[in-house]
Length: 135
Image (cartoon, rainbow, N blue to C red; front, side, top):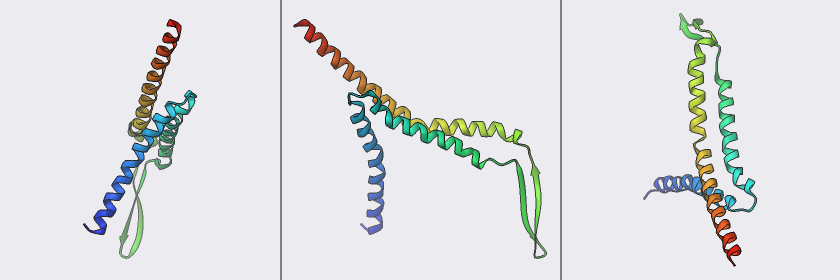
């Protein structure tokens, strides 16, 4: 194996370690007595998705397209189209919804893990409570 292939494999292992570590951290935090600790990672991923959607506003333009070209050695600027913001709204809304949904997939996964771990703990707690009452 060449050094380049080993570097790529190490990078892929590192990329896989991040979500796996996040899952184990979520399980660990969800098992804690304080229920709010298990919601930290889902809140972080949700905040990142909101920031991504808000950041999309930075890249929207008013709809003016300018064509730059050289004619006889001179740079000439020509306005090709002047569409209003109203024309861009349907596409922008679709892009925002798509980005928001895709960016919240980790949030949903983390919340499912949180709910599963908390339900398991609640059932165990209820069983212990019933066994104490039976005595």
